[in-house]
Image (cartoon, one colour):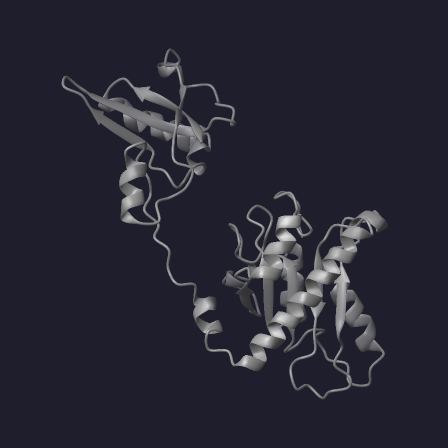
Length: 283
């Protein structure tokens, strides 16, 4: 990828230029890269400061530096995952070292028995089928599935599959999760064993990470755990991006989040674009 950079005339100019990037918000971009590169030549040290991605407009430079000319430079697109990668990337631009760590969910999932693995896979299949049907009908392919737990003999336990209906209903709040909570609430109001909270102790499967509104709705519904197939880096509210509602200090309920590590079924659906969404869509 390309990024805007600028050469600092002298060492004393580094801090004023870095302060300017902080005040203008440029320092929030490209956090996998370090802000300064020093290149030593035979006669001097060239100091270059990272500004932002090349497709981001650059704010006016401070008055004292208006004569400087930003220019574009190729930089690594991602952090370094191992030491050989770090050496290669640092040769282009100083890069953050972020080695892969075992995913706690993946480690815990190894402890599941065969019955639970089978149940999870069956739920994922039903969820993806629901999203496919939604797309065929002209809706966004976002689905939510509330299954019965393995071995649950409670006849009043609601099973529900919903999808996003913002397109057909022309209503901005008709997200799949909100539709499911409304449906379960309606069904439980007809039951003699309706609970105070709609999803207490239940497991929920989602094709896409819920937005902040839906993540909070799940807190209020007292869901036990949520299985998410696709993270939404820009709009998610469950930890796939910058926001994680259940990690906030003052929420009065927390649910466990399981993140899907794709296997053949979901990979095929993603390749076909069935579950694909623009990253600015909130789900």
